Length: 146
Image 1 (cartoon, helix red, strand yellow):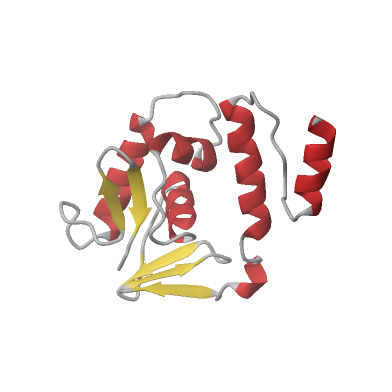
Image 2: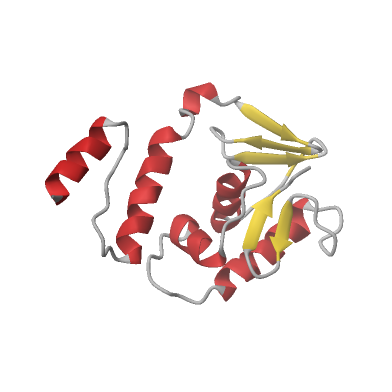
């Protein structure tokens, strides 16, 4: 029965058990919950992260480029902090909308594109050939690889 399968799965080391059929939103929420639990605690991260000529101070909410301060809007900073927390990982525009702007509905994903454009102008040497915030056509955006 379902109950026996659930107990066996959880006792075998599963973090969660999803009974089919399951709605996509529920599965995505459960995945995000697991990912939050396995992220490195803030105390284990370096105070200032160095990425090429970009220095990101998560605790101080400041960004330096080549040693000089970069004035970022709150949404730009939040986007940079989110993407740089998982270098190389690709995030869809919808996921960024949910995580950075706290929009869990299908809002206009062009909001993400506009923020990426503004952020690139401020942190990239060449916004037409980005080093930090990269586009993977059809998939989304990622930080790096550098």
